[in-house]
Image (cartoon, rainbow, N blue to C red):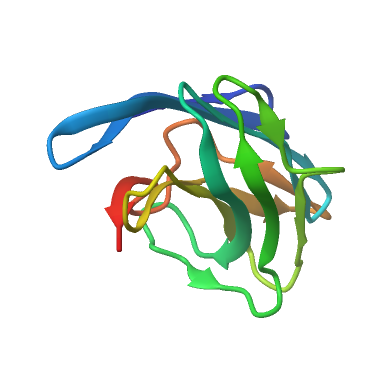
Length: 166
């Protein structure tokens, strides 16, 4: 998969979009596009739309959200009890699918800075294992009673990953 692009729109809205080929043993099997938009409201971060589609039919599609606390350049530590998942058994080629009905929402106000880890996994045909894409949001930190994104270059460590796993 190729790398994607972060954009921040004001202090409470940001997004990430990634497009790239994925395959098996040197053979390209498809093109995948993933997109997530984050909106802050106080200490709540909502990932919506949380979107996925590929150029071929896929199955066992899983969206996952997780809240991490930590600042810019840090890996982040999982906040207990904040994992969310949404599964779709099969997706036709080029069909946009979304985390329904309202995306992934995370809320915690006990730490000063957070990022949200969002990911997609899918399988294809009779190939073993699964393909994945994950992205961490721009870091957002508390100022007064609310949280604000810190700029489109204010990223946690290892902000994106993509590949195949058994």
